[in-house]
Length: 191
Image (cartoon, rainbow, N blue to C red; front, side, top):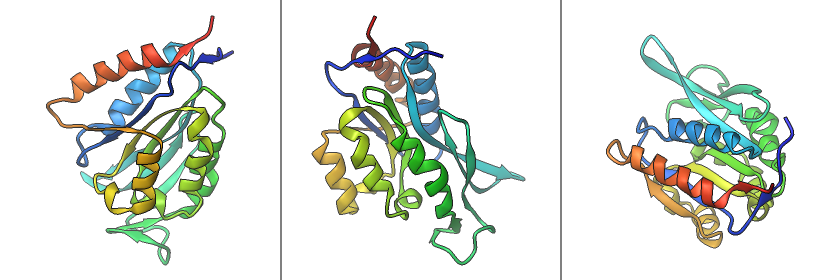
């Protein structure tokens, strides 16, 4: 597919926050589909939860462009490494999928990061990769609710003028519609 260059009147800077299970990743997936329907190049990653027998056992990280994926965290794999809650975090997944998917973003494309969270932040290069691309791309992501307690992350959000939207079960359709309109307005291919 031949993607068109984008006009960049203003760079989109939006982060979605909210409690687990509210629909942040689903919202991001719908916005990725919409951006692609506009002919926009989309880079970055999403994280998906994996359930077994009704219980969450971990998370997979998926490059939105190539489709490559790996375990980001699991309840029983990757023992001996860092942990977030009951999950063992696989830092190699960030090295092999997460960070390269961010750095692949081309100027004027849409970088999608799902999520800026505790697991991803365990890798020392993650925030550096975001800093590398943020000024040249439109940026749409999700962020954990307590991000303000992490000074480097709070500084990143503030310095780059992100709009942070809290998603709830009651506002998710409205937020989706507003962000579709914003994508239509701000992230347009040149003809």
